Image (tube, rainbow, N blue to C red; front, top):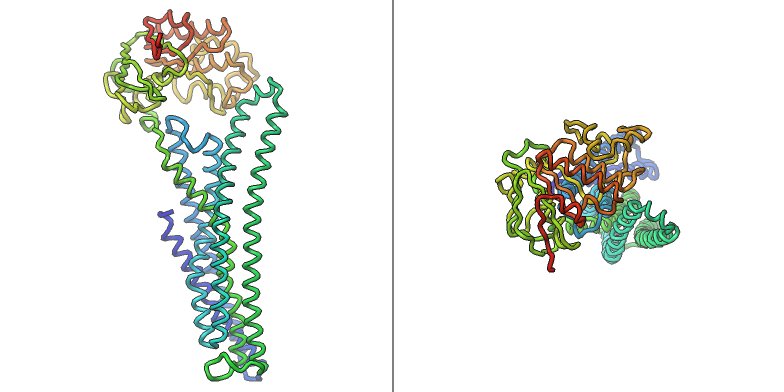
Length: 535
């Protein structure tokens, strides 16, 4: 929150100055009431106008302070959210801070918890450090006994807040973790909803989710219980302090108590002035106490943001923006690289127009090799050369603009089929659909190319979704096509359609690299490269 410290401090100081105007109003009221009690002449109109003018000024200053704090807080949240979204969009693999659900929770509801901290707690903290000191000085000026009452009772509130704060922060941190975890669970269950329904596991999944929701509810209530308990006790301390001041002033004015003043007796005006000041002495402390829960929640969120920023997972090379194609032959070379698990990969050299199959056991590094070739992951060791140039942040965007990528798990945007396939690029959509063998499927949909797809291709079978990803990969007639397990889990006819679509790209002259367990497909390539095969 470094960028917003200055405007937040200015907002807090403005709020404190506005609160410091109350003693002037209190003195006007005290003088007016004393005149009524003693019969002294006083201009009620002047007192009322002065009181109203100062009150209006106080209101305007408080409003301006709140507006400044709100603007600064919104700016901070927006900056952190933009940085989080930008970083996650370029992250090469899932980080250690949770899945998509946890990151979404952090970017939305959790970051929003910084706003009340900035708009309520920080200004209250500045008021606490200034306003009570002024009122305490004014109280001692009128009566040393009144000053002692405030001096003794006031510090009890911050001491109790510190004790409660430790428990509140721990409870808030547990709640933050639970919110992220339950969001991850929800995303996973929604993505597997079709499988859950097919397996008849709906009741089991629902019961498990209900249990997680119950745990979160209990943690939330625990945090609220601490907040309500602390507020109740602090209100009690403040009420006791005001009551003690009222007792002292009342008995002094009645003549029962004859000590506590600086030589002269306590006048009615001074007594009323002290009674009006006492609540405002405790008010900043009460404001700070009520915002203490905001501080605890914000501290937990700040810790999570700091942990997220410390996550050292690698980013996708380049900026992810559309770029001019990288010039040079569509060739690829991996040298001294390792897989995501750290296993060494063989040196691979693929010439322009060559078709190559990467085969090997599961987990050997076939997908890692493809991701390195596509510039979707940075090489932890070794080097990647594409089009005769090292694959770096400067060349990655231009290289990817020449690629067609077919991942193993189909994934779509929540948009029309047309947008999912073209992604704003020029090309022959009908030809791509026909080559992928999915033209009849699209034609049979109620809205055709305008049919909207969910992220998992709702309404499509697995084979149909796989063929759509093939159509997307070949739509712009790329120079290089990279396919990860393109025929896995497909029936024979669908596998044949996908295979023929890929081979058509090889016949067109595109460089074709596939990672596969399908040896029938592998044998149709110009060359087979074995990865991690110890046999």
